[in-house]
Image 1 (tube, rainbow, N blue to C red):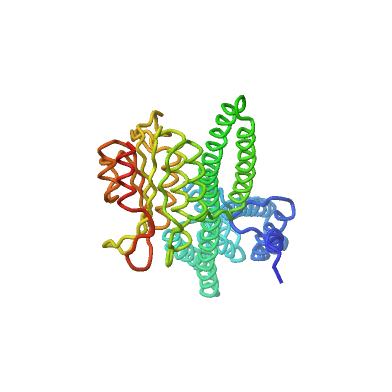
Image 2 (image 1 turned 45 degrees about the horizontal axis):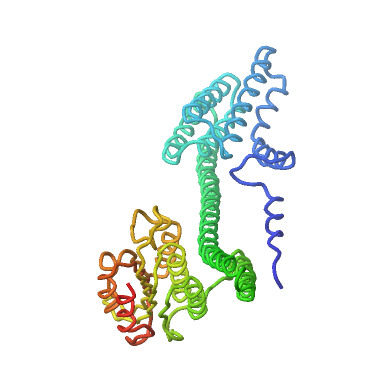
Amino acid sequence: MTEDPRRGEDEADRLVRMGQSPRNGREFLRKALWIGIWLVFLNSPCADLLSGDHSTAGTVGGWLGLAVFVGLYLALVSRNMGVKQFPPWLVNGLIAALGVLAAILGLTLGTDWLGLFVYVSVSCGLALPLRAAYWAIPATTALMAAVGAWVDVDEVSGLALLTLLIGFAMTSVSQLVRTTVELRRARATVARLAANEERLRLARDLHDLLGHSLSLITLKSELAGRMLPAHPDKAAQQVADIESVSRQALVDVRQAVSGYRRPRLAEELAGAQVALTAAGVTADLPAEPALDGVPEESESALAWALREAVTNVVRHSGARRCVVSLVRRQTLDGPVLELSVEDDGTGGVPGAAGAAAAGVVRGPGNGLTGLAERLQKVGGSLDAGRVGRTARGAGAAASAGSAGGGYRLAARVPAGGPEETAGGTGAAGDAVGSGA
């Protein structure tokens, strides 16, 4: 049975939100009730004023002093149990005022008023930092004992113990409130980071998906336009291909948005063959790759790398030949699977967006940046640049291509299994050199 996530949210809404201001009247009443319960210690001062043992001036002064004391206490406690708190200087001033009022009322009106020191101790435990509360609570207890000794109280020791214990208990409540507020802020931060990561994933996927598909659609549209006057049948075939590519692009975008898009290397190799052929580039691609022991995430990262590299070759390179090789190598860090895409073009698109095909690395573009992030997440790496400059490890393909120029992108991911070649040969590299 699946638990409804909204149930937990509804239960949380029904509870008093610790460390947050009330959102509505019901929450305000709940918090006011929780704070008001602790006003039970005011029964003795109220009973003393109602007894008639004091003069009229003493009674009026007592009610006025009690009202000011309770107002300061409620303002301090209610404010410092939320997210927005009083500044430290105001907190210290309010606690000092509470202590002075409690001492004055206790000295002038008698022993029934010593319970006010409990509220001073509670205020110290809730509103002060932990270190300050550790000495402020005993100081409040000592002041209460001194006032009690002055007015000759027999039960000072019991009241002093109560003041001390309640004050330190409130420090635990204060720590709980602070921890709750920090956890809520941390959860909000994690949610923002997750949202940013998801937006980055969508931007990466949409760039890779639409960049490849739209480039192919543009290319086939140009071919259809040139073929239409003389070869309408061939132009119709190109239009049919455009429809097929656009439908597949729509499916890919939907899968990417849903989070289920995980491209396969074999499918991307077939798509690369179609795209390169349509662009008039002679393609030399490996056969069905052997991916035994390669994690699915690593294969997906290589598939994205192949798509990005082929898209750049088609759009920007002006190449006549492109060689794709897939080689399993043994390195000091363990076995790796290396995908290499090398062309003999000269490029002609300035700026970062065309860096991968133009051979002039002026800064990472969106495609290369996203590709590097994908590979880094699976423990891989990316090398991209002119042949013979930043590309390395391609064997005969790199050495032959460096004589005629061109651009090479090499993506590596961790792979298991013995060292073996999964595709691509030295002869293919020689073909790149001759094609240049």
